[in-house]
Amino acid sequence: MPWSATRHASENIVHVRYSLELSVDDGDQSLKRVLELMGTDDCHLEFDLRDMLGYQTGARVAWQRGLWANRKRVLSFGLIGGKPLLRQAAQMIGFVLGIKVRSVDAPPSSEVA
Picture 1 (cartoon, one colour):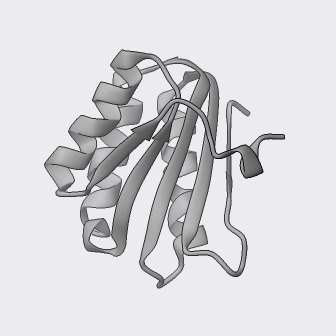
Picture 2 (picture 1 turned 60 degrees about the vertical axis):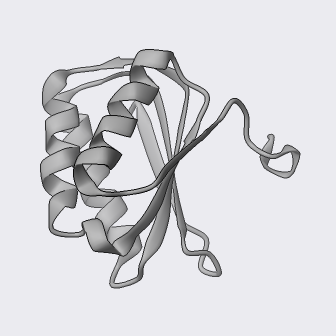
Picture 3 (picture 1 turned 90 degrees about the vertical axis):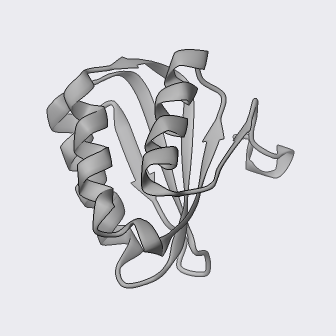
């Protein structure tokens, strides 16, 4: 599976890590998992794009459409690393949904494995 999604019980941050190329099916499945992890809470979504190579257009569309109904519960998008085109796609989703987006090249040192 080219993605993983986690949330620690004490945080309002859902961490999503992508690798390789994201298919439409993986985009849909990862979105569903993120929404499950959010539950009824307002959350920040943090995307680690450092190992992601690309995505199928339908994966981006699935995220954009799937988050529409929940956009007011998404406090922000955080982007870690990634190719410029991947960051631009995430920023476009944020723009369309009215979600603040921030980017960093690497996670804080406390998060480095």
